[in-house]
Length: 440
Image (tube, rainbow, N blue to C red; front, side):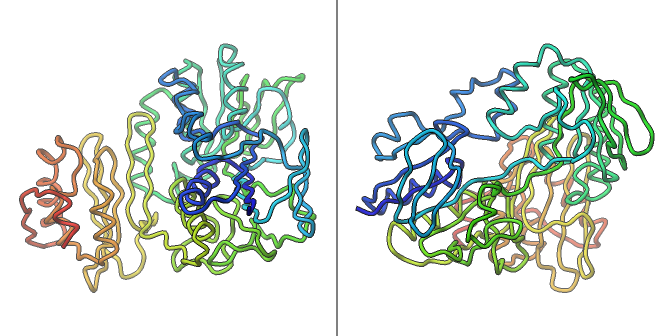
């Protein structure tokens, strides 16, 4: 019987295992040094804040692994002999494979500055990071968080929940500046500051100081900030350190083709650690998102289970997040500044904001960013796949709306504002069953 070994039990690895099992009787082994069972990484914040228990982050109960004959190994892979198809583990016996899937995920980037190894300085990515943070939660009174992305603002919210004083240091001129436009950045900035968070934009940390434990942070502009905790959330990078002296071809990540095949036969890579040699148009070489990891695991799992070679097709871009009472949704490639040939429309009311891009010449809908407005993913996915016009999108905004409150109060205002600003006469249509709309 063929033995397929998966290193990593995150969303990519566990999804690959599920789809291999759906289509094959192969022996499947999943190895992880982080957690015995797959857990929802996006829920770490809610565990810390007491909204769920860690056990509640397991999407599958223990019986799921038994029923699907998934052999779980809780250990660390130290090296791989690709010619002998053998994995050397830290604490248990070596494992021989027929096919190998590398789903090793990401690891937090480091600052590489003086004092970074002091006690009280850490990232927030793994189960172990959460445990470290929980062990010191009652000792944190003055904290600093570095990095203006989603993980950074989540950690800020967690520390704020713990009633710590928080300084938020962001290298860029605004929050999530590589994604959001200036108006969106200011929208988020004002909301975070209203919670009592001190934000330092265009700033970086030069060094940390302390006697064994961090007590001061020094910025490049000369500020000194008294702290007892520092959270480093400046991004992640592929977790491939243990592979760097192997025959595997690496750049930033593990190089793969459109079938997730590496340069070594029967060895594949998916998820955060995989770098596409020839990325799909408008997509990044490395996509470190939950949904892309899941899609890659599904595609490779089906291919290996069925013995086929279907190409990976991630579909239209989307993303979502929730932080400090703000729910964010993105559909399509919405950059931080509109590009040449694009038109932009922005609507804002209270704690709600809507930004839309469309082609200035063809009227083709490009995408939206929405804050505290809930929309149905299948509807926007349908519009993006079918290159819908911007007026079709706005005409059917009621149908796209997921929130009853929004559909009653805000879509008419959005369309009316669009007509006034852009000079159109879009007429809002009555809400229909959204499945009927996307079946057209």
